[in-house]
Length: 369
Image 1 (cartoon, rainbow, N blue to C red):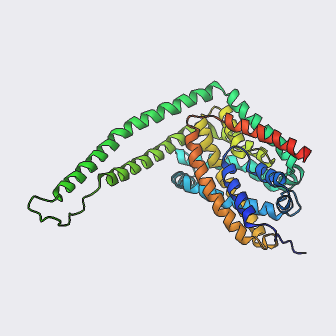
Image 2 (cartoon, rainbow, N blue to C red):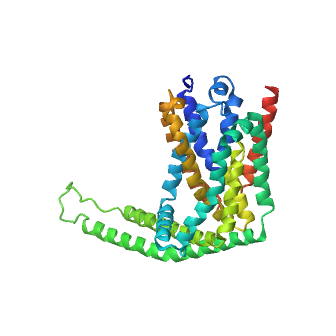
Image 3 (cartoon, rainbow, N blue to C red):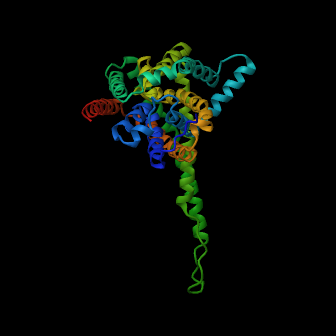
């Protein structure tokens, strides 16, 4: 019998796609939200979008959106991934891992093996057993408690790492400012000279067209953009240098924490961040490492389900998948840009509160519904 999902509307696909992209990177569990949302709305949403149903097309749709989310992460971190992939290839060629990029490549590979193996073996069991709305709400509360504990019981080493990262960033900014200022001044002076040379003289006829002068702001903007990109690339190298210092074993422990995210309601990035901070990483480095670890996992999960979407489970929803994927990718890109800046100065606590409140509210609502 053919499994068709004709009742999945474009509105449902758009909402789920946007939520997937945002909540996949925010530490609030995308799967938990995708389980709870249809149950809370009810009606056709609850029947059309049931993640726990046998051979659920909805699950195939959700995981298919992971490809768009992973692409967004690859775009944001593209400079870093170019370095890391180059490091992996050179390590294979040289049969050694000595440079930061080489070590980072193997750390990511080793750290993703546990969650990959467990996901391949037990994904179906986890989904059927725990992909129920009330259980997802309970685990969302647990996720909030994990996030809160991660901030409340941070180690001295992690707090010291925060200060170290802030000091390095301040030093990098101070070194970058003189060069950037000089380039901006040079561009501004050159533009001013061109403007003066093209200014109308007293002998010019009234009403004669004035040659267009160069706009100093354009040159300054381009120069400033280049300086910002160079600074971001340098900070990425600095962050990876700090990350590889924790060693492969610690990276494996942090990566293994992602296994908990197979439970609907537990955030992959959230638990990886908390594990990273417990192992002594700064909050910012823990966030970066969690996003880098998530990229191959999310991409692989999406690729594995693409066969379902092109087969009988995807009958009638290809257009919806396209709409959802676009919104998922956009939401993910905007989210990672926001979060990388957010975690430079702010904490996981607001997300912890959100998870507990939404989880408790969902349990109460579903109980009296």
